[in-house]
Length: 544
Image (cartoon, rainbow, N blue to C red; front, side, top):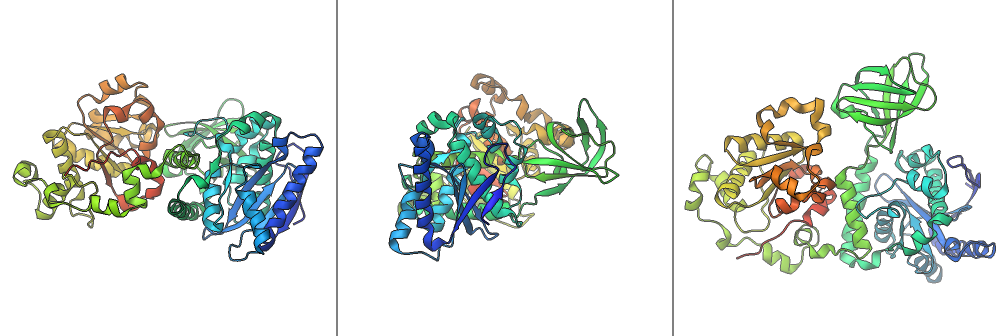
């Protein structure tokens, strides 16, 4: 590949030169980049513009990084990422120095992930700027298309997000990689970005200890492997459709799992009875109805509907990425969170502190009233859960009473100790089952459910506990209102994913019901790394 004809953006050049380098002479690529920046500087670009380079990576199905693409605003420099092949020490040192340079600017979308993956793969430190958060806080990100619209003054960016979120396992994957790096360079070198990039906090792997970098790199690789396995095309099941105003269609989804959702990372492909393909985007969703906008004619008949691309990142994914960004910008130390250390970075001192203590288990007599309906093993589990041990792991096959033990422990915390506890599960159904057990035990609790899951789809499964239910769209926007809504309840239930909803922290719910005790049901079904940010909130009490 010596050049790419690009039609993604209506910006020059229309043809991008591509220079390819094997891993053993990767240092030559960085030298060529520096020479190109010197030429750009001589032609009138500012110093920052000429020293800003776009970066992107591609990977194989097993998570191994395949290529690294660096770019100026006119050319791409493609490096084979084979970590087992290195050139001479001088050439490799040039490559390493470029990755961790303080004088040039590597700029990429989702830069924390790029930096951690490269550090894990190559063993070199990486320093750069995250383009996704240039104009937002660390808790929110802008999609590439939105950043391009703002900085490059381009309105039609339909193809931009697809470069990041469509499946890159086809023959054009290297071309997509090069275009991602080039677009990153275009953004970083734009006049409108100059001051923002100059003042942006740098992502730098040198802020983290070696052991932390190794673990995070490994966890991210596992996450990327799972993400690549997610289907990029989903067939929608619908009950009805009708033409709306302008170029819009109202679609009645028939199944929750295949519903058309609003996402900047996907588009809708409608095939008419004649075989003509119409492409549109979901712009609104309410209950079972999704409104789809088409730019080039609306279909009058529908043979099939598919969603191409991905859903929006879940709140948990966004929260995890924001945590990694803060850590790499030296704004948060992951090792300061006891629970995070216990799960991922355990020290010898931690091992001693979490070892069960005979003194920590409560007297069986004091708990007798709450254990009378439990068998021996269930009673032992409840005693352990309500002890002062910081971590208790419970496992057992279906039907052994795990839900019952959770409800009994919550009853003790609520009625006997008046202590706050959060009970979460992987699925809405598991949380609902626990809520029904608590209702029978007359425990004072509240159950938070997302509006999207509840409205028109699953209202019927909550009929028994409707008085305890709070929808996410009903949450107050202030701590006082939240305190009144929660009332005397000290037990809060939700899905684990819902914990990442920014509204919960913004409206003070974690102040009203402190995150001191966390019970995770169906824990074996979750990717725990995705919820690392929650474990930074857990308060661990080491009373003896």
